[in-house]
Image (cartoon, rainbow, N blue to C red):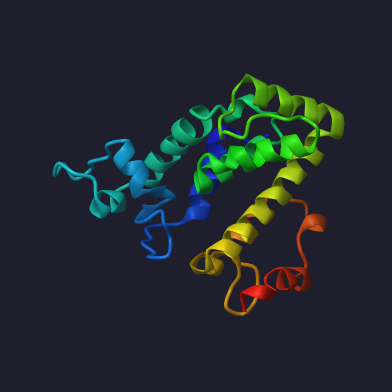
Length: 204
């Protein structure tokens, strides 16, 4: 398995540089670190007494990697999950916060391991994840999570039309959200273009 630092560096690569998309509720973001996270951590990098878009623009790649490891891997206890699950849940935690763990908790419940859907990896969620992995297989559970994650993105875009541009491109191809989820799935579990178009047909 890749080290947590390698995983964090890959997340930074996927996130890219500075963006401030008005349709993205994350607001000004650099290397995946949003202004909300910067304010929570008190990252007044320009020393002017507040944390604003200028501070976000100053965030370095190295700082982002450290933030992800500390705040999105260790703090939410992703290291307590089966190893096969950790990369996708970690990546989703950066992208969707505690929604990443809620997806897992819903999935565990669907697989006969009912747990509270509270977005927190406590002893019960961790134990349920290991029981599910023992029963159906580590890789199978990780794949099921990847599929559930992909569908979470589609459902979010169903509810929020401005977000659809992240799930599908103007030419009808898969958007960044869907491609990101499928990076953690084997090719045989990727949706075909026809399947993606069928899933998004109601958006047009």
